[in-house]
Length: 287
Image 1: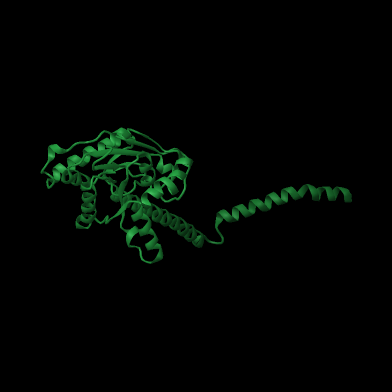
Image 2 (image 1 turned 180 degrees about the horizontal axis):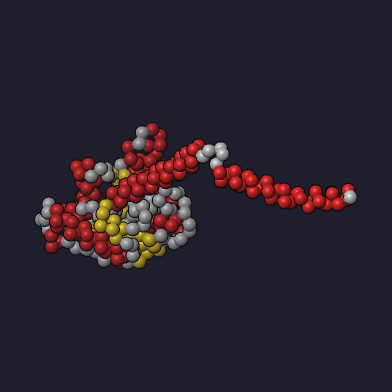
């Protein structure tokens, strides 16, 4: 109930009025039955805009911190995201992700739409990163099609690290359904799972026009943060070395440095030259 109130009464109409999101390929989303909606992930607002473009309910995964934060803030977050059709995802991987996968399988078994971001986290630089194989495993185990889709422009409306950005019309593009029934019974084969995931990511790349990078987004983000930290530390160290060298040079320069004496002497001579005509004039006047 809360989901439909948000979508059709409180949040949805406001977003539609202000941002006017539009979609292509909505005919590719089945009117009934379970299906996986596999999307790129540019902004925290992706899950707000995409469901507005189709009439059916979409359940997404959200990071587990939204559901486990203590106190009043945590309770409000959990209440909101649960009511908005979100389920928690432990992003540490491995066995910790089993809960989200099982939840997704349950939702698909009920004949509902399940939205997932195969990259696992938002892109920090607008590029598309390697997908995790959970989406492939769910597609095979649930025996449902995968609808690749691209959300475009949300990183302008709500850039990473900011609440608000610049105005643009978010665009959602739904691709043709992908059927992986040819791999039935092979959900434990990691090579098959990787092949399926790569096929899904290729379709998302074609729809979004993003540059594809064949490494995981989380690793790329950590590498970028580490590089920025090292660059900042290196710049500070270089500045400190320059300041130290300048201080050492000043400390070792003798007071009777010949260059300094010569400059002082030249300045005295120039002062005398400029003063001489005045003295001569005074002498002439006296005469």
